[in-house]
Image (cartoon, rainbow, N blue to C red; front, side, top):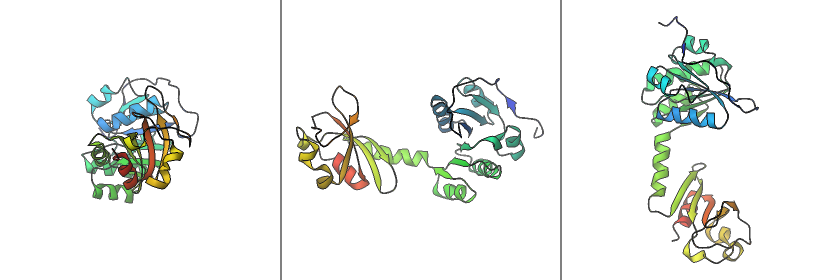
Length: 236
């Protein structure tokens, strides 16, 4: 019933947490996206309160997260009871139920949480979340789709879109640059990208310098405008 306090799935368990402010994070929605976010936050040392109305999901994450509660996050009273107003950071990871996503986000905004990340499944959904006060709106499916598109073809190992116009690309040394130093190549002047770091074959990543000599099979991380970073990765 609505007047009953949220059910706690297990007692508090201490974990090492960051000392900086904002070390506690509220994660609403423990599906695939929310569960992955919550688990990764715990691995980074954050104290995480996971909330979901589905008892099965609550039980599934009971041993992985710092706290897990079964509660209706669209109910402002329930959020107040579980102490949501005490958190500086919240992630609303509710996906397909757009109404629940909007109601939960709105309720958390009203509680004055300082930083709110909310998952959106469409552009209209995202605009609504922004208008009701979400500080950061993410589109996991769309972002992953664009990322995979860049990986198709084999030359791009990974792709990090920093904003609409700038990206970092992980790729291998183009054949035409093998055996040459970054100074000799003049990568920035010729290709419009910067080699940020390099992983020689059989070694670990290290900073790239002007004297770094590129070898076949070396993995490079380059930064530049999206079109130039893509073009560099496909030099062949």
